Amino acid sequence: MVTVDAQPFPYTFDPSRVALLCIDFQRDFVEAGGFGESLGNDVSRLRTTIGPTRAVLDAARERGWAIIHTREGHRPDLSDLFLAKRDRGNPTLRIGEEGPMGRLLVRGSAGHEIVPELAPEPGEVVLDKPGKGAFYATDLETILRARGITHLVVTGVTTEVCVQSTVREANDRGFESLVLSDCTGSYFPEFHESALAMFAAQGGIVGWVGTSADLLAALDDTSIDGEKAS
Ligand code: C5J
Image (cartoon, rainbow, N blue to C red):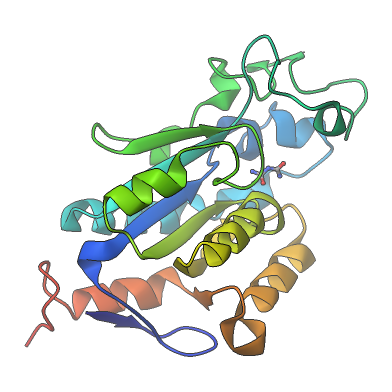
């Protein structure tokens, strides 16, 4: 078992039953010219998440964890895009319209791809989702249950939108989530802090919050096969 210092109390998991979730590290959210910037956001605020997430991804790969990358986006014909989603944000550049990285949040466009630093490797699951929560209209729950996963280490953007929706959905399905504060980010620092505080409040009503450094330190203390290192 691995135990990580976390809020509101230490987070313990069986390394054979954990998955790393990397939520929506797409060029459209993290790079200039994408969907996030089209909404008037400063995307540089999200880029600080990439380095720590890469370190966690490397550790997860070394240990053979299940790794799941999600991408938010839509079919090219936009048949899975509700008007309630399309009609939000910047009216001059909506989902499906042509931006500097291709059609915004459309599957197959350059902006829909995961940033090269965190690109999926063969054998890792890449899950396309039309909504904010990664369980909504996807087979994520089936994939996790088929592998016996009970615990999720969560990274991704943005903290108060797709990360928050996903950890709440996970909690309702009985998964235990550790959200890494430096591997998640928001265009709004105050929303990032509030969302993290909400997860861990009331005795961890949604989940746990920790740092990549604390997770990596706990993994260093544990051998690759999950035994406590001597
Ligand atoms: C947003 C996301 N912010 N991945 N999506 O629209 O958080």
